[in-house]
Amino acid sequence: MGRTNNFSSLAFFLLLLILGCSAAPNPKLRARPQPCKRLVFYFHDIIYNGHNSKNATAAIVGSPAWGNRTILTGQNHFGNMVVFDDPITLDNNLHSTPVGRAQGFYLYDKKDIFTAWMGFSFVFNSTEHKGSINFAGADPLMNKTRDISVIGGTGDFFMARGIATLSTDAFEGEVYFRLRVDIKLYECW
Amino acid sequence: MGRTNNFSSLAFFLLLLILGCSAAPNPKLRARPQPCKRLVFYFHDIIYNGHNSKNATAAIVGSPAWGNRTILTGQNHFGNMVVFDDPITLDNNLHSTPVGRAQGFYLYDKKDIFTAWMGFSFVFNSTEHKGSINFAGADPLMNKTRDISVIGGTGDFFMARGIATLSTDAFEGEVYFRLRVDIKLYECW
Amino acid sequence: MGRTNNFSSLAFFLLLLILGCSAAPNPKLRARPQPCKRLVFYFHDIIYNGHNSKNATAAIVGSPAWGNRTILTGQNHFGNMVVFDDPITLDNNLHSTPVGRAQGFYLYDKKDIFTAWMGFSFVFNSTEHKGSINFAGADPLMNKTRDISVIGGTGDFFMARGIATLSTDAFEGEVYFRLRVDIKLYECW
Image (cartoon, rainbow over all chains, first blue to last red; front, top):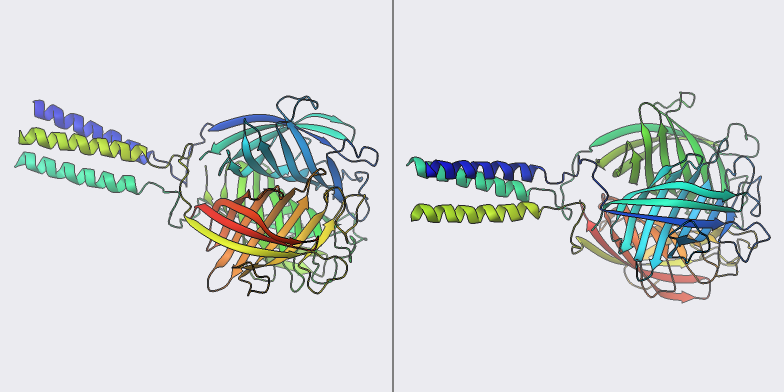
């Protein structure tokens, strides 16, 4: 009897082990997990308009033949490319102490409505965070929220991958906007 | 005897388990698998040339000092940057109903021959597909086929990674080209 | 006694198996491993300055309203975008036989100091290496070393991910610079 019980519990153990092993991550089909890291930041973009060179954090550097590089062009700014070095803050206040810099570019890429494509990094060098998070993707900016990809990271964010949900927290004319960035990492090393 | 047999089969089970566990995916060395998802699309690029503003889906927004932004420059268009919002279709017919938009940029980056570098997204919002696939990579466009990277995805393509094989399906002068994109995802969540 | 011993060793085996299974790679929390592949290259960038069209491997294609595309602009070149097709060499000699091409763009994105954002590929087509490695990230180029992301790869570098550590190996005025690129791949398929 005792021996039988022992074998039974062994069999049960083995079953658990088999289930446990087959639940090991499969790169081809994985259940959508919880983020392994989640971070929320704001960044602030002040576009140079010919009069604000002291405060501007961004400048138009490309435009289509029918536009120029001082004023965002018509047709929903189609073809304007903007380079930026924007302060990152923890709250939605432009004057809060920056915790890092958002650096890269966006380009307006549709004639009918506002949409953009972005490639940029969050660069941190504080006691809180050291390293960078790299982003790329389409930003259909008239949508309340939209997702872009976290394509990599360095330092504290070594090899990170995930999704960043963008939302426009404020905009003032064609000079200032503030984006809320909700970063959800699903690969953390 | 029976007991010995039981132990033997247990040992055999254990061996299988050990093999099973060591076959769990190893991020450092994986055999090249079959794609977990495969999709084929076409997209259509009509570059603004000063006369086609109604039909154009793309515009030159950067050029070297020796060029302009209305006509693609000499030296294999070296230094021209083009922003696009191109219709995606399921077949090679420009007039088929678009199933999404290809949005982003390419830039010609070689003096001797045509080569480009691309960063763009496929953006879907239909009953069939919702979400985006993000691409980046070198496009040596004189080659019959060439591979770029799928660097991320959102929505239905959450966290996707893979390879997209591009081939030029048609081109007409310096105004229109059509790319066939064979997307092979090897990471599907 | 013998039976008990058998059960003990079985229990020990099971313990090992449980530990072994739970050590299977977990996409949510992985120990930082050794690179699965490591490669060191140099690449050489000669910017067009109006006088060197024969030797130039790069050209300014975007600039802010206050700059032009022949001379890198003031304010730490803020807003200049450069497209390049640079030779890759195994050592730090510009005249060594190239083993591939570095193709893509960088843009200067800060007014106060030199920083850049880069998107580019290493393209190989030799007996040694065939395929491409794709990079993106912030390059705070005044730092001795800085890390960007390997966001994908094709051919021999199929699905690669990792980190590339950049260091400026030489620069001459505003015409020539040479970068050392120490590529550490942590995902090799």
